[in-house]
Length: 233
Image (cartoon, rainbow, N blue to C red; front, side, top):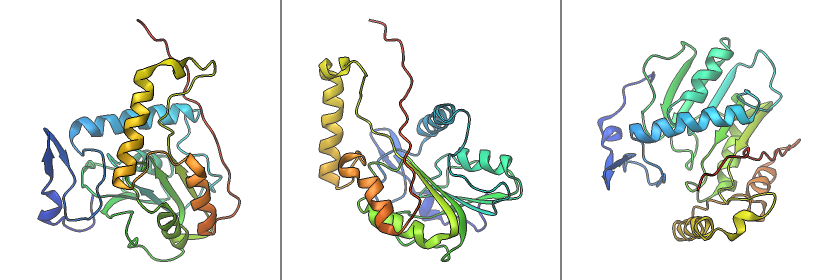
């Protein structure tokens, strides 16, 4: 639910090649649609990432009675909802450009319209835990984003950032010989270069460097491989 009424302009979605995208009220150009097809994809992504973390919603060592939690780029709201269910004493905010989240949610979660690439609307030192996931391809200034996270994070709080490397890799190097996979990476490289919003935060350690430069300490890096799959030809 939203604490205040959502203005009509927010609901004026743009339609491009049959898919809907967020309102042009914001200058940001989030690369993904906001229609039902995309929201289903967000939910699937949430489930496989949770499985990848051994059925955990996060890795940060937050206390069991965490109070204020922010989910940046909440999408369908599924992570925020699951967290609110697991931590009923916490107050959870999910922020996004589009009000696409469900109305029936736990009483300790609500959603707000906010552009993560601008100045965040929350107070300094406010959140005990800030969760940021899968914003690749949508942010021009990653250092500025993490500076806002640092400002809004309470002393002793935690920020967790999860971004995928969308290159395809294999332990035996067989993916290197697949031209379609190389084409995939090349297109994302080109698209990110043209928009100024990279899809590859691992290059030049952009993610890690931006977090450190923002002032965070006790930075911990976890590198997870997507499990193997069977390819039928």
